[in-house]
Length: 416
Image (spheres, one colour):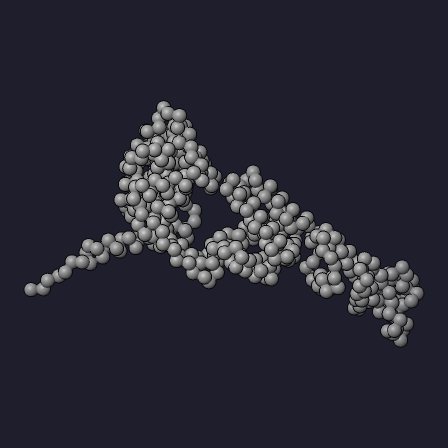
């Protein structure tokens, strides 16, 4: 790239001054740009800048004019460094677009998009939960696959409306991504862009317009009858008995899988647990124990499994379905999901929908139905998201209405 400033000899004024034009050449392309408002006499135009006037002359604005020329030169050089660092082949249209972009500056000379995303993950590795870091890595891989498929090169300045629409269509049409998962991808991308913006890697705020799609989904939980049936079922396999105990312990305490997995004998007291919550990092969270959770813990005292067997999340999700199937937890259950505007209604035997997450949902839902105060449940479950907690309240209210319909509303009043 070569940049030169020249006087326009075809536009000389009556006083002999001429306007200044910038000429940028690259790859056989020539771009001309008039430097509006700047004029210079031939005697003041030296080495592509305006020379100061002599003491006897009228001030010729050389300070202001040269500042404009220097800023323009810096911006042109920044644009081409940006092209180079991001491996972009410059074109006349792209160069003029960057030149006209008032917010484009040296801050655009950030590391490559994916290099920055990797830095973002590493920076958060010591402060975020392991599950969160895994999600970040998954999103990084998803974006790389999108770039290969769409041939849409990701840079900080290309994260705009065009990107959002192409990425959305790729997720729904090519990957058949459910709306809620797409929403999580967008949320993590926005978190990364915020992180990069705070470090001066870019000044592109288009990503703030991205909308996170989120559909309400069913709360899958075990009824009290199903929970007790599972808890009291004796399996021929000791492995399945251990899986059942691990899962039911979550149903009776409201603990997440990550917290049950971290339990040690030192966390257990006579009537309660005291733990440091993995996900929210809350210290000394107290979890009261009921008679059912105590009975499960008592099974493993002085065994190699104390306080509870260690089971991977993958194995737990795989084997708890087998446990529930054998306990005949097979009520037909319909779930509805959306891929964009496409609705999917799927009906399964309930045991196929049981995962480690449904244990916590069972505790919250059953506690509400049994009349425990919402504030107490939130404290026990360390629930910080009021919107998601409302789903359980709605399920509980619906259950109470059904009970009313099955009892009081069936009474027929006989008039005499």
